[in-house]
Length: 463
Image (tube, rainbow, N blue to C red):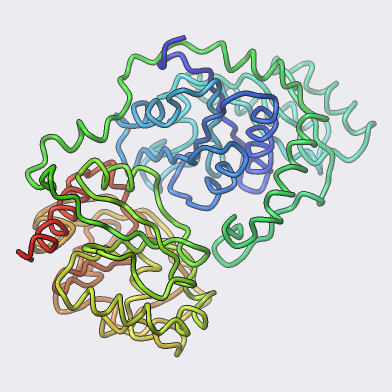
């Protein structure tokens, strides 16, 4: 079988809260336990669900976001992530047809399903309906003829009688029922202010939950029918995304003989990252080494560059603050002029404090929690040359936080926001680039190349 014909399904829902993460993760675990190599994917920018997908499959969870990366990269990124897999499962985002605000279908699950030529299995919350489920499914099946709604999984079914009524109603819809799952809170996943609690914060419990989900899926779903549906797809004509080829035109990468070490923050406090970022850094010429700011008192020996992504530093502020040796090491590295890329959680960690708890003090700003959620896609431009982006570089990103930073921008801002509002945001100081904006580097691989080239100059004493 060619890579372009990888068996694949998209798991969608009429709306958020129907249970698509539960079903998608359970399916991934069940098929993996059956001996298949399963490639997990998530529509949209979310970082947390892919962590559960990775736990279920043993492979990196991959995001497919048409707003962040462009429609032309969706199939190539999918094929790159699914290389060598027997089956690929793609969890949708929000409702099937919900996309970026005021952009039509852009970045919706439906659009990604069409770009992947993949059949859609709709997870329906049946807890408060019986015959109406058929009308709902009929509407979703007929809304866009290019979307192949090929099956339904009924979730939160109350009883045998309820299931019978639902199946009888669905008989007239023309869409087969591929599973029915009872209401069951045993395999629940706790939530917090930004959604599910990440796997890294509850690994033992998460392993147990994923095992429970797999058992429920085996009991309630027709795995053979789902697998046959996944095999009914055509081959994709696209070539897999290749990080080396993407970086080839870049003007700045490290020399082959000089591989600077770039440390990447991880652990429970910094769980937000896209798998392609580390791949791009490595291809650009770096040795990528993870570290945990909660536990490691020093940066990896020989660190010449630093990447601190998103996560929950506000939850771990006391522990991060207590690790004074590492905070000092990060401040020293930043003062040396080494390139530092900090997104969202990284921005807060580099600030003076979070809710009064001292942080690294690299940035002249204070962070605090609020009740207000800042969430949405953004478009931005680099206002000046910096360690991450050349002046004029245009990016698409997203914000996702309940904190505020005061001030929100330095004398040299990281980005000039151009949509949906015009403002400046973030900090550029020395080699530091710090911002609330999450950017997917697969859309702009030169960011990784520029960061690595800067680290190589520091390693060579030319910083």
